[in-house]
Length: 219
Image 1 (cartoon, one colour):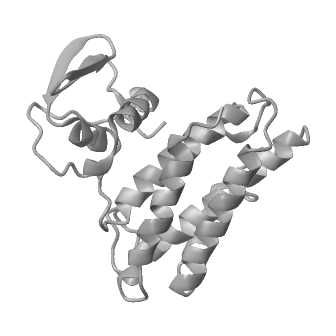
Image 2 (cartoon, helix red, strand yellow; image 1 turned 180 degrees about the horizontal axis):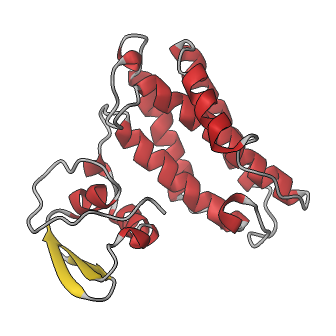
Image 3 (cartoon, rainbow, N blue to C red; image 1 turned 30 degrees about the vertical axis):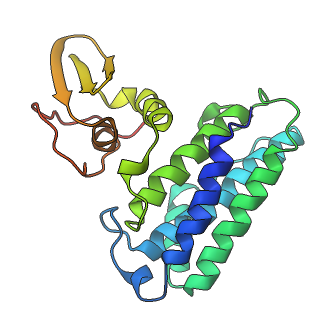
């Protein structure tokens, strides 16, 4: 089903986009190697691709996330990043608006999609991650400190495959304890948002205590 947190995240991103202009769009984002314009291009293209996953599934068809696979996806991001900011932000608003509208037409959330061999319900969670993570990556007024506890717990569950093999990773935050894996115990302490940012490969905004292991690749 369509979690209300997801349209809310889309609306929050639309407001955040008003902080982007032609000058700061060309500056580095918090995602190494990407400018804010690269992120904007990716978010808009993601919205189009995910909308297609939904609309094709509603017709009983399964299609690739991006025609041409990762190379075509990356080439499109590089090319689109040079577009004017108004075009990039307008694309995001339209693409994510189309995605929310497509979700409203879903009659069976168990319909299969090709992306990650999932189902339509997964598109909602995928978009939640993409929108809220990259909103923070834009390095504007919204940061990982603003991630909700519900979002952090969802993201940590998704990122369980990153726990190093042979270890039981324990993340201890005020009022929250999260653990996964078997083997040698590793305990990291800090704010929940900082622990989640670290698990997501982002720079925590506050201190973490404990020996930080090298994480497995993004799932």
